[in-house]
Image (cartoon, rainbow, N blue to C red):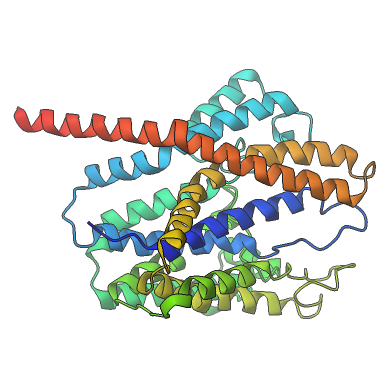
Length: 403
C-alpha cells in the first residue's frame, strides 16, 4: 500500500480554500473604489492541481499493469460523482437566481427550456458546452475537470508508455509553448506560419495564465497549455525520483511558501487607466506578472511537490489535519461556485447599500458555510456513491471472470 503524502494533501486543501477566497473577493471587485483582490494569484492553484495530478498518476499507476477500461472506471469513480452534484446544484441556483442576470446566467436569457435541459444533460457527462461563457455554465469551476479528464486519457493512452527522455523532451516543449502564451510571443514568426489563432494570442497582451474557461479557440489553446506543462512536469518529478527532505519543519515551510505564492496581488493589465498600488507591475510593466507566474509554476510548484513527496508531517495531529485538508479540497472546489453565483447576483444589486465590513462578514460566512457544506457532501454523498460504484465495478469484474 502506498504511503499517504500528508504535505501534498495539506497543500491541496490550502489551494482549494484560497480559490474560494479569490472567488468571493471577485464578487465585489467591479464596485467603485474597490479594494485590491486578496489572494490575487490563487488561480494558479489550477496549475498546482494539474501538476499534482501528473505526479499522483505516476505514483499510483506507473508500476501497475492496468487496462484502459479499468483505469477510466477508477478515475470516473473518483471524479464524476461530484461533477454531477455540482451541475445539479448549479441548476438549482439557476432557478433561484433566474436567467436575467448578465453576470451570472445571462447567456440563457433567450434560451428555450429544451436548450437549457440539453445543456444541463451535457454537463452531467462532462461534455464541454460552447456558446454560454463556460465549459459548464452551471458550475464554472468544472472547466478544470474537463482538462483533468483529458489529462487522464493522455496519460493512459500515451504518456504512461513514454521513456524518461521522451517525457523530459515533451515537458520542455510544453514549457516553451507556455512561455510563448504568457509572454505573448508571436508563434507565427517562430514557425513561419499564418494561423489566425496565433495572431490573436500574440495580440492579447495580457501576460497571465488566466483563461481556458470556454470553448473559444483562444481559451481551448490556453486551457491545453495550462494542462500540458504542469501535468507532464508532475509526472517527470515522480519518474526522476526528485524528493526533498526538510525534516520537522517541512509542512510549515511548504504551507507558508505556497500561501505566499498565491497571495501575491493580481497583475496589472496592459493599458489600464486605473490600477491599484497593490498590483504586480504597472500598465507599462505588466510583463512582470507573466514572469512571476512562470516562476511560480516552473520553479515554486515543482519544489513544493518534491518537498511534499520527500518529507512527512510532524506527528499524528499534523497528519490528521493534512488528511482533513486533503479530503476537503475536491468537494469544496466542486460545490462552492454555484454559491458564488448567488453572491454575484446579490452583490451587483447591493454593493452600494452596505459598508465594506458587511461585505467582508458575508464573505467570511459564505466561506465557512461552503466548507461545512462540502464536508457534508463528502460524507453523505461523495464517499457513499464512490464506494457503491467501486463495489458495483468489482462485482462486475468478478462476474465476468466466472463466465
